[in-house]
Image (cartoon, rainbow, N blue to C red):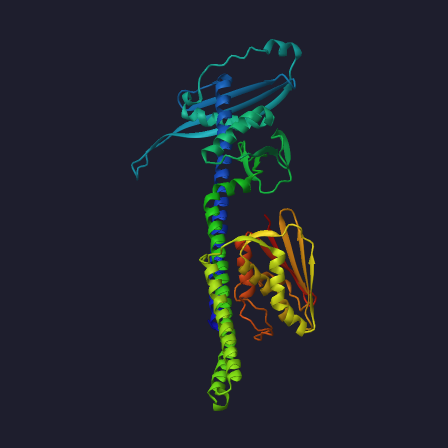
Length: 523
């Protein structure tokens, strides 16, 4: 996959995912806004109905309690009707008598017939009204006599004539405002009305309320009402005869946001879940693309390295065969034997390379059968060291043994464990810029033996340490590998150690060397 194509596809995927997330976010915000507006609309409607219900209830009570307050004092049966209404309200708390009097004069006329239109209007009425209000002190003796003596007829509002209803409403709207607000409605009635109307509109969340007289709160308020709270709903209550009022019902919902979100939590949860899933899928797809790109590069690098590894022995074999064909060499038995041994060694070298690849492949598929027996780790280490000791000496280096383990026997495969240690020692030699300096330590930890192979080579960065046991991985600078190999050695080490129920790790610092740590269970 070319780099430009990879970047182009990544950008398209990124733009697509960002677009989807933005659309989902817009939808979520829109759903929240609609829910807020619907909540506010329903709550305002509930408050208006509460105000209407309270006023209707007060008017019904007024009619039922004061049906006998008016009397007809005069009446002209032909063309004049004078109605006088007298209403008295006794306030025993403030020692006051409130008197309201309204006189209405109704003149009836009959307009003569119009000769041109041949029409007439009968019972044309003209109204003249006079209203009087008076507040006087209540005598103590009268106050005693009046206690408990009010006796009203049980005539209801609906039984009054239509004309009387309008008049009574006029009286009510002028008389009722004189009463204190707490005598017109109780906290319980107000709260019950609010709960009823709100629940009928699907709003079931705590609320705080208060009745204000202008800018000042009255005694009608909930315990936790906060005057400074924002997002408060307001509706006027108790209009007077002029269509005005000084009282306002204020309500707010402390958990409004939580309630709104609870109503849309299912679609909101689904939308957020899909957004997260889309992001995760995008990240996973991008990761897989990068991984596949890296694997492709590693495989290409592996093929190049293996080609190089095979090219040298093949060239050596060809040269040896050409030399044997030489008439001067073919008659020299020693020379022929020398070239034959050279061919055999190079052939063995290629065979080992192929075997390494096949072993790793079988280990990946769990097809490699490893027979195990009781073996001594110190013996295996000595055998592995003997394979590389001569090379180390030729390079002017050293390898020192620090065997401190007492329990050294494990259940394992002698050949594979030897190859494990040879691979690690071989890496220590390859990645030493100067003469190899290697120390081998053993110690016991519980029921396990720990082997540490420490070198003073080039070391590794933290990033390299995370990948050093990956198949085909080899540290490189740009496109150049400083050390020959095919990147299978340490991958093989990890697979074999894990097959023996052990662990392998590395501690390293750039330019200060590396320490490979192998832990195996003892028996």
